[in-house]
Length: 170
Image 1 (cartoon, one colour):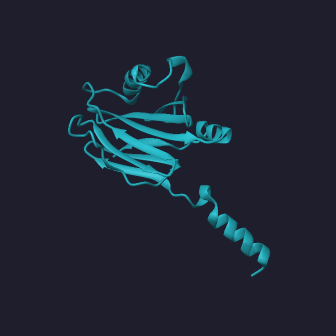
Image 2 (cartoon, rainbow, N blue to C red):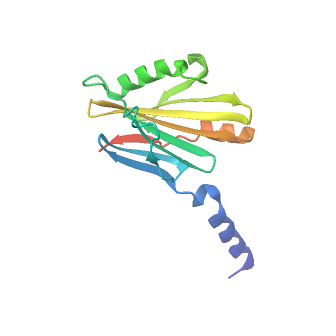
Image 3 (cartoon, rainbow, N blue to C red):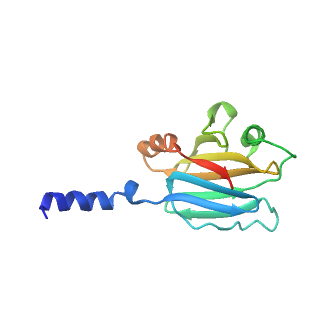
């Protein structure tokens, strides 16, 4: 094989973006799937506070990334829009979350909404995203993803990295 082609093939295989598997997770009760192509595959364990708060479902990390899944019960018949409105209105009341005007919010698809922001930490900027939807009209779903930015490029990449992210009812 041509040495230049071999080098190019090795570089392509070693590329963290292309070699990294996407984050996918399925739950059964309530039944939904989370897909975030820009996050690495990771194992999620039972949330350590699940006994105190049954809506605290799963938690995991891989490298600089962490993900948690929350499934609070909702009023009967709540839609993904309803869940997003309620959760996003409450976000600034959580510790470390900035005021509403500093949180970018958008609809990613028919079922999935996102709130995304960065907060200053002693070690850098903590980049955070909340994907929100509803399942079966009985639960809201919140997927919280975070990572620490070590460069300005990390922050730029984070804010553009949720294309294709979704929460799908099963």
